Amino acid sequence: ETGVTQSPTHLIKTRGQQVTLRCSSQSGHNTVSWYQQALGQGPQFIFQYYREEENGRGNFPPRFSGLQFPNYSSELNVNALELDDSALYLCASSSRRTSGGQETQYFGPGTRLLVL
Amino acid sequence: AQKVTQAQTEISVVEKEDVTLDCVYETRDTTYYLFWYKQPPSGELVFLIRRNSFDEQNEISGRYSWNFQKSTSSFNFTITASQVVDSAVYFCALERGGGADGLTFGKGTHLIIQP
Image 1: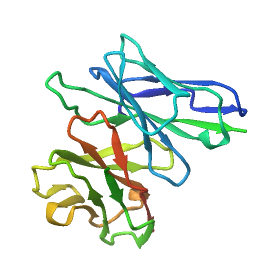
Image 2 (image 1 turned 90 degrees about the vertical axis):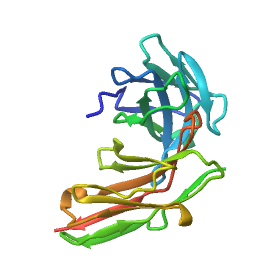
Image 3 (image 1 turned 180 degrees about the vertical axis):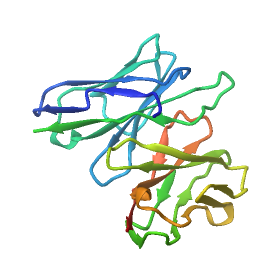
Image 4 (image 1 turned 135 degrees about the vertical axis):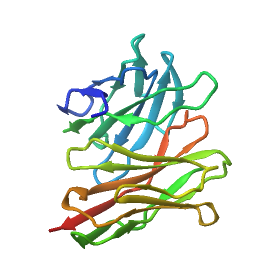
C-alpha cells in the first residue's frame, strides 16, 4: 500500500449538485495531484497542488477546483455536476524538490463518483 | 503536446507465456520521464517503474523487464513466465521535466492471463 488514502470510496450524486472528495498524502510528500479516469480510459490530469497553491492544471473547466491544507492533504471540489463527471477520481502524492522537479507519484485507491 | 499510445487494447495469454506490452510516446521535450503503472480490478494504480529520458539502460526486476529506445520513442514492458496475478490493466505514462503538468497516460492494455 502507498499510504495515500481517499474518501469516500463511492458516491452517488444528481446532476447539478456539488461534491467534495478528499485525499491524504503519503507521509513525507508535499504535492498532491488529481486525475479523472472515465470507464475504459486512462487517467486525465485535473490539477496539482504544492505549498497550498495550484501548481499546474489540465484541460478541465473552472467548476473543478481544489484546496491543499498545511498538512498536505487535499480536496477536489466539483460544482454543477454533469453526467459526464461520472468517473473514478484518483489522487496521487509525491515529493517536489525545492530545486525543481518531483519524485514519483503514488496513487490512492480512488473515489468512484456516479452522477445520475 | 505530449501523447502516449498503447495500441494493444487487450492481450490474452496462457499462464507461463511471455508477453510484451507496447508503449509509444510523443514529446518535444528533451527532459522527460516515462512510467508504467498496473491497475488491478480494485482500481488503485500501482507504480512499477520510472525512467528518465537520459537513461536508456534496460531494466529487469524479477519477471519484469523494460526496454527504452529513444530512437523509436518506445518504452516496452515484458513479463516473463506470466502468472494469473499479473492480470490487470497496465498503463504507460509520460511526464515533462518539472512535473507540474501531471502525467499523460495511454489508454491502457488489459492483460488477461488464463490458467
